[in-house]
Amino acid sequence: MSDKGMTIHLKIWRQARGAASGKFVDYTVKNVLAEMSFLEMLDILNEELVQKGEEAVEFDNDCREGICGTCGMVISGVAHGPYAASTTCEIRMRQFKDGDTLTVEPFRAKPFPIIKDLVVDRSAFDRIQQEGGFVTMNVGSAPDGNAFPISKEHADKAMDAAACIGCGACVAACPNASAALFVSAKISQLSWLPQGEPERGRRSLAMVAQMDDEGFGDCSNHGECEAVCPKEISIENIARMRREFVKGALKG
Amino acid sequence: MAEKGSVAWSSVGKKVITGLTGLALMGFIIAHLIGNLTLFIGPHEFVAYGEFLESILFGKFVIAFEVVMFFIFLFHIVAAVTVAWTDKRKARTEGYRYAKNAGGKSRKTLSSRSMIVTGILIAIFVVGHIYLFKISPSKENLYATVADAFTGLSFTIFTVVVMIMLGLHLRHGFWSAFQSLGWANDKYLPVLTRVALVFALLMAVGFLVIPVFMHFTGDPSFTMPGGH
Image (cartoon, rainbow over the protein chains, first blue to last red):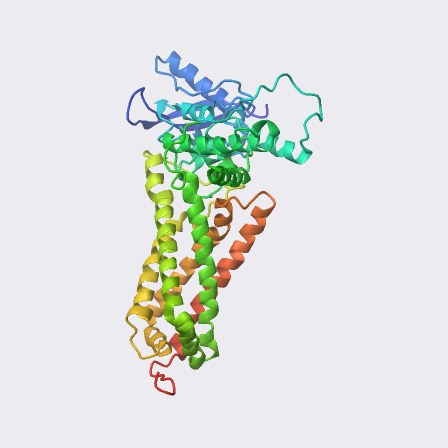
């Protein structure tokens, strides 16, 4: 530890459960160590709030190691904070300076209703998945290596798309609140593999229809989603989703 | 896996429509620019080029072409307006109090953000353009009409500004069309975005030198020998 710690000013969005809107509330957290994660800093704030008899700031989190996709907030205007390829829980306070003022807002989109403070309901993603983000064949146990004729390139593309943890940052960052990156990753990962073949045509049609029904916006190819994605999912998946969709539509 | 709503008018369907019509419109403006460049050869050649177009298939070609172009414009505009305006507003009813560009791999630019504004401006310009040079020409031949239109400085400047808007629109629109049609991947995206910049510059500069050239050299009293 190089110094005594930083003082961080926070403007956090507070919204009561069931309220139509909320407002920013100013907080100051002292003795913030560079080694702390952003969420640990919020934990300290909440400890202080509870000791003062105030209500703690609600935020989603689970694994705190960037693999579960539960956490997510917009820090200083950028989903998952100003550091590429990380979830909110992977943000470390060393990325900020002593005396910084950070705004903290929830992911904002109509299909992601705010439950309370920074917690949003992302079950729209689950409903999209249930429409086609699965295979219906019985794949049995893990097959022997090289038993399936899948090239390394295709396996890599499938794996890159499958890295999506469904955090919703793509929707949060999109100027149109589009879920194209999430949905395309889920369609794309299965389109590269023989296991995904039987439902290939129907999958893209069904998942896109559900995405539209949930009320997500349309993609304008801004590419903000790729920039904030903690798993660096490429927008090439969105192009692939469109190709899959056109093929599915033409086959009927 | 029930199908809900129309496939063609889904979020992805609308992008495919916007991309296809966008490509068609880009093909059109390339042909349009090449045709316009006959202005630099001379007034006779420009008028003759116009008359040649009018004469194909006894004038039926131009009419058929105009009908097709009308629908291409219509689908491009309606699909794009729902994407970038109406659906967008519905999908985020409460906006961020503080939002910043993520930078890095983002392709969000002034050009991508202003598509709806530049697009509407271009659409208004196209309507005026057709009225001025097609429906109600001020002179007896097309060259004199064009020269007459650009005698005024304000209209010349206005046209130059709209052509810069066209360049901005194409900067995002060119590569975005390929992405919207699914004709892109990590290998081709960087190539497409670079070609988009070159294409946008070529089109904007190509189209904006015409009003400037005509403002300084145009002769509104030009008549074709033989009384056209």
